[in-house]
Length: 141
Image (tube, rainbow, N blue to C red; front, side):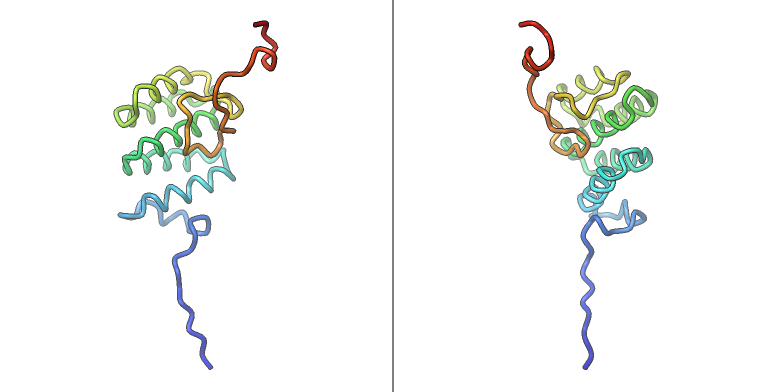
């Protein structure tokens, strides 16, 4: 008795990186890169690819999330790369997103800091929203 194996498309986490950039596959490729970068946050080529893929997809949330993750991964380093990718995508971002990223261009972003506007597609941010209370930050009210 022969078993018929149906070959289904694998989940994004199991797809090979060389499949990126195929027409009509942007969202699946972005999902793969998001999962990959959550596990390998220092992969700068992956971050750059994700920003470019998000830019081609036209998704403002995907672009912003990809840039926030790049800014987290690089911290205060790589100002040239951050600046170049921000310049390429600036017109696809809203003013609040652009302003946030420009403010953090030199310093980068910490994963544990509150980021406004909230980057829904970031995989490296801890997702904090709002401002810390003076009691928690050690400041007096």
